[in-house]
Image (cartoon, rainbow, N blue to C red):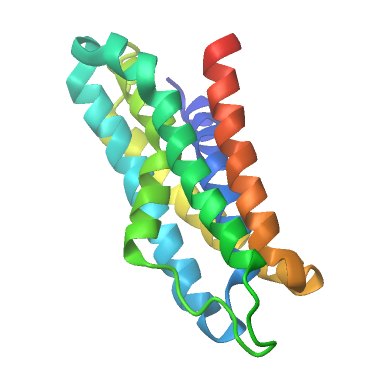
Length: 187
């Protein structure tokens, strides 16, 4: 696989993490934006780089198992997190109160849920004579950069839609989970 194709693949794999980063950025307070932009980008970049390596080394042994449930795992994780965000968005909070942090457990669940496609890509890399370390470096780096930028963009959009930021973020995650599920069931 040539470098240009690998970069396009990396950008494609980073789209789910970028969408989640945008959604989470909407609800973060400005004071903690840099910290959580970095943490989200680091977690997403790490798992996007790790999963193709796992897929690559697992190879064909688990293709049937992974491809038959990956979309359900992503759908359930994103749906659960999305519904929690909507619930939090509906709760009455004082005007000065914002989402102060994103729990590490949530960050890890989001990172895993958005990197399942990268696991499947890693399996295909084993049969395409791709240097897995080179591919993982590109995938992780591009995901890190796009996720970081999308958290910042999400904050800009969140300030416009401040009252509805958690609700819109939750809806975005649920729709992303549905998209993943529908793609795997029907396409």
